[in-house]
Length: 355
Image (cartoon, rainbow, N blue to C red; front, side):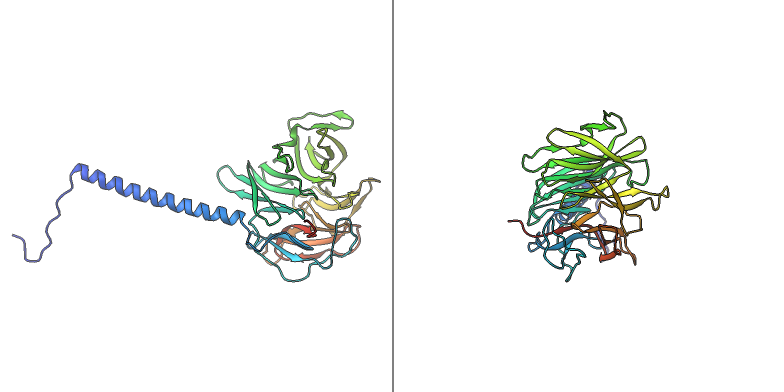
């Protein structure tokens, strides 16, 4: 006989009841996990694409990726600037404003922007996100690979991006890239420009190891420049959108960037076999084909951006534990490099003159 106050023995569950309990527990666990994952993913996706309501393109200002937050920020530029203006020694002035979209690579015109956002995974992907002047999402394209280069033409019509299909550094030969071009006026997307009719040394060229990267557009939205690599060599190519042709102009040119007046190209040139410091910044005069080494002596693995016709901006590994810093240097080979933004990357000047 049971003692007074002792708990009543539990009635054993039958086989069907036990199965029902297990199934219910599993469903609750799976449902909770899926709900959490979906909530976290939605929250992350929102953070990746959305800028604060008050954050938009305007200027004159230097826009850049804030390496601490991963979001786009900007600082005012000292003095008004317009494409083609000669305002030597452009400097940032005023406090940093944050609140832009989260991007791994960023570039803009006065009228729109391109945000590349990495989506990690077993097979990494990149979101190429087209933004309007208020940095609101207009279009999103998912491509396989790791983001590395982004460009927007001055008009905002032409966009280009490059991803690493394999590898993650231009300092080795064990990489493959894929470069796309998007025409916003027609909506036409070229997923890979590797099928362009390429001419090297006056002859049509075909090879399975051809890689393109670092597109930069001329003001007419038809001509562009890029790097092509094949057989262990890199070339500067001039491309034509209407004819869909490209011709090699010279060797040992990487990540070209066309000046606002369209007369010069900034680029990185391989000057050493040291994988830790292989490149130096140069400027090429397209009329004379004369190269000028810039005052920056550190190896720059970036597609430099022109702040005006006299000043270049680019990222270097940061000091004091920062991911990277934005530096500027005169484009004529004179002067001294200086830090423009601590903890910044992907610099681009926006004049703020778009309607």
